[in-house]
Structures are given as structure tokens and as C-alpha cells.
Length: 107
Image 1: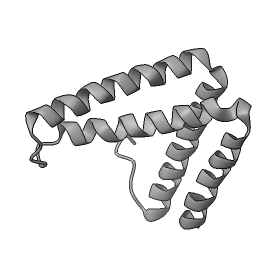
Image 2 (image 1 turned 45 degrees about the vertical axis):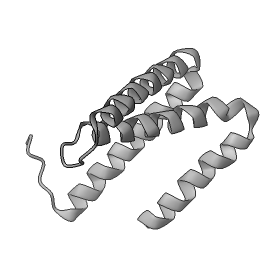
Image 3 (image 1 turned 90 degrees about the vertical axis):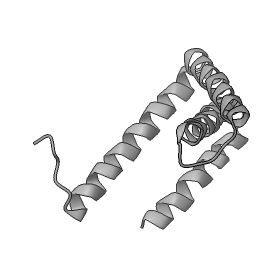
């Protein structure tokens, strides 16, 4: 089931990209994914990256985060999609953890 979800959801997003009106939805997802991948790679000490590469990755991450915020501010449909996608993902993660028997430490 997770494999099916992982295959179908990106296909739906790509299909939505073909509709010209929905292209900001795809942009906010792609820009956010790249920025969220750059930040931890840049800050980890386990990788032996030269200082210049760390600085370049950090600067790129900051620029992409600014672009992400700009898209979110100017395109409310894209922001709504982003919030729904994050909420659905976190909900499914919580459901999967409960089914696997992980206890909630806050309770």
C-alpha cells in the first residue's frame, strides 16, 4: 500500500502540472523539497564537505526558502495545497506509527 501511494501521488501532482493554472502548486512543492534537502546536508558534520560547498549550499537554501515564501504569499492555492499535503503526510505517519506499536511520549 505505501508503494502504491508513493507512486500515485506524484503522478497526480505531475498531472496537475499539465494544467497551466496549477503550476504554482508544483513549484511550491519542488522548491520546498529542494530547500528541505539542502539544509540538513549542509549542516551535517558526517560529510566531509569543503567550507566553500557548505556556504554555497547554505546560500542556495536561503534563496530557495525566500522563493518558497514568496510563492506561498502570492499564490494562496499553492499554500493551501502545501498545508494539505503536509497535514496528510503527518497524519499518515502518525497512523502508521500507532499501527506499528510506537507509544506517544506526550501521553
